[in-house]
Image: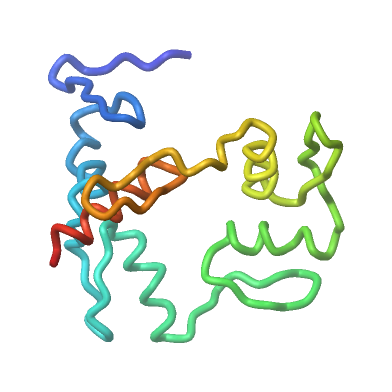
Length: 148
C-alpha cells in the first residue's frame, strides 16, 4: 500500500534521496554538524535525541539488552542481534563472486566493493589533497578544515 504525502508536506532531496519536509530539519543536521542534544552528565552532544537517550544509559549502568547465550549486555537490541551470530555461526550473506560467507551485512558489502573497484579513494580534498572512499567521508573531513 502506497502512502500519499499530505499536500502541505513538500518533498526535498539531497544525495541520499528525497525526504519529506517533516523530516527535513532532522536530516539537515547530518549535513550541518549541529548537535543540539547534550548529555547533562558529561556534556557530549548528539544530533538526535534517541542517540542521547542511548548514550545516557552509560551513566546509569543500564545495559538493558542481554545475550541469551552468554549473558553479555548491550545498550540496544540491534547490537544483541549482531552479537548473537558468534554463537550460531550463521553466515547468511554469500558473495556470488568469490563464494565467501559473512555473518554481517557490512562485511559482505565491504567484500563486494573489493570486486567492483569501489574501494579506490576517488573523492579528493581540494584544500589538502587527502583522498576518501566515500563522499560523506570527504564532506566530514572538509568540515574539519572549516572549524580551524
